[in-house]
Amino acid sequence: MVEYIGTARLEALVARVGVARFLSELATEIAADYRRWPAFDKSPRHASHSAVGVIELMPISDGTLYSFKYVNGHPKNTAEGLLTVTAFGVLADVATGYPLLLSEMTLATALRTAAISALAARHMARPDSEVMALIGNGAQGEFQALAFHHLLGVREIRLFDTDAHATAKMLRNLGRLDLPGLSLVPCASAQAAVRGADIVTTVTADKRNALILTPEMVEPGMHLNAVGGDCPGKTELHADILRRADTRIVVEYEPQARIEGEIQQLQAEFPVIELADVLDARAAGRQSPTEVTVFDSVGFALNDFSTLRYLRRLVEADASPGTRLDLIPVLADPKDLFARLLPPTAEAAPWRRSA
Image (cartoon, rainbow, N blue to C red; front, side):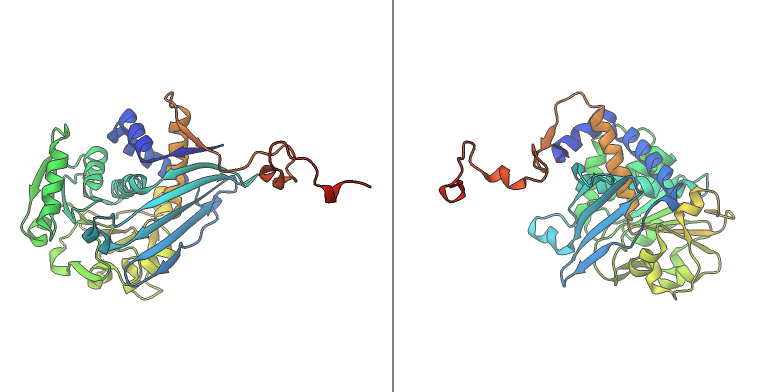
């Protein structure tokens, strides 16, 4: 039997732990895995693109556990009342190849994306950062806001979206939570939101080379958390921001970021730093208070591996009854798979009887 986490069970697990603790523990789990970076068999995700979106498979293994995530990205879906992103994931035992856990990953992906954003910012943003601009207030918005508030102590978040309903939705949702010390400020433009901000998070959905941030909007010492660019031909930052002499760029996994991230706009030899080197102190996330730092995050399979393992641990500690799926047949004789299709009291057919 395979452990199963559906959306209702994930919601219950998050409610039991609490969002702040969940994000904090998940960020710790992810950081621990990045610090053992060489242990993982890594590859860019496999993407199947269409005119309206993308469907991707994201595999990774540390030799003991294996995971993959199925995820799509279809920006047109919201016009039809559907989610832009949906996902599910599997955690498996390498020794047997048996799946251990099947989990929803739509909510979990939003949580882990927020957790790694805050984790990277902890090492890249100025330590005194308190004000964040959040450009793009759609499905990811609240998760990013909560992660930066709870994990970094951000006290003011300036909101802008070209869709005013998205900003209103964020204000309504976050207004229902007890968030002392957090101020939410709706802004009339991206320029107004980023002016004077310490951190700028861009998390838009349009599948195009957008210019959410241009060079004149970027101030010395800013940390840019670029989350929305995550496939070929989909970016949010003007390339000249990346080319600035005082810009430091950190990515999750360089071979994938070269294909899908903001750095797809740059020459292949343009230097970037992998997050594992920052977390393991082999490279600095920031060298000076005036340096501009960019976390070019496209989402990497290791983030999902850590999330699935963390979820499995939560399920194991959960006293409430869960769900298990009979995904793998149980056999008295592992070489006799066909026995599962025989009638319970089947007798030998005449043509099989001995003379």
